[in-house]
Image (cartoon, rainbow, N blue to C red; front, top):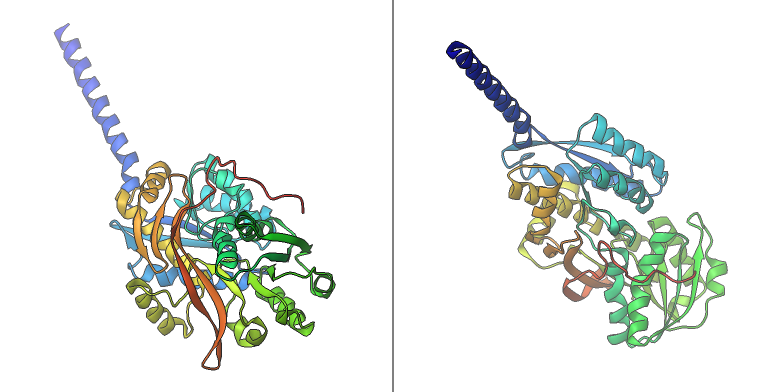
Length: 403
């Protein structure tokens, strides 16, 4: 009997040690081995220019940390999200998660693609980070961090500035006919109307529109026109036709898109854009030590000044790295999400922190297109510091009215 009891005890001890060893081996990869990031960028389609910038921006940001964080190496797999075909974005996301076994998703860029992807990443779950503005509907998804505020929130300061500082009282708008431009425009018109201004007319053109003349000639008289076209080619067409009709002498222009006026557009048509206002989360003239260092390094690398779109991908990657440092390299989505929402960072955009629902508290910059020494450029008119988002996970924020 004693021998049987001894044998049983030995067996129990061996099993316990074996199970303990198994538990240790399954937990080890959480803090060792490479961290895998899967990125979805628009490498084809109407936003391919920006997709190329994002693709270049990833190694630029990771080279600074030698492609490692918290003692772990970083691997990045980049996929083409497929332009406006949201089924491709979801398919590529599943490939990154289920086949490539990535730990974090960065992107996608196109709003419709994110609407398809984020319910999937929230359900798995896996942390997803968006370097771009979010829609109200997207903000309902868990395990998603945004480093740029929502469409609505990003443009809210512009409506206040137009009313309070410029004395504008009436506006009309022309925008592309889908959800993203609705909410960008809403950001301006909500605050403008809350201050007492009047929205007299809204017109929505197909995303593929190439002639805005019919819309322009039917505009009601107003102090200003809000434009939300999305994409440099459409923007250039609209402004050229606007000037041909002499309307740039009658209306103050507001471009209600975060980060949407590249320097090459101003180089081409800057004369007809003079006085155009915009509200961005970044401009290369932001005056802080981090940005001065970034601009110098970026200019040396790419032989141009950084655009807002360049900055947004850089800040998103810095946020991911800071979150991973805080967790000691642990990519568990609950831990990583919690760590990021507690961050307080000094970035090239200015101070960056988060509300618990994953939306950022960040600066906004009111910009105006001016002629400075014979070159058309944007100048910072006003800085709105540490703007708190008005939409968030579970929000009852009012929807955009009938088109």
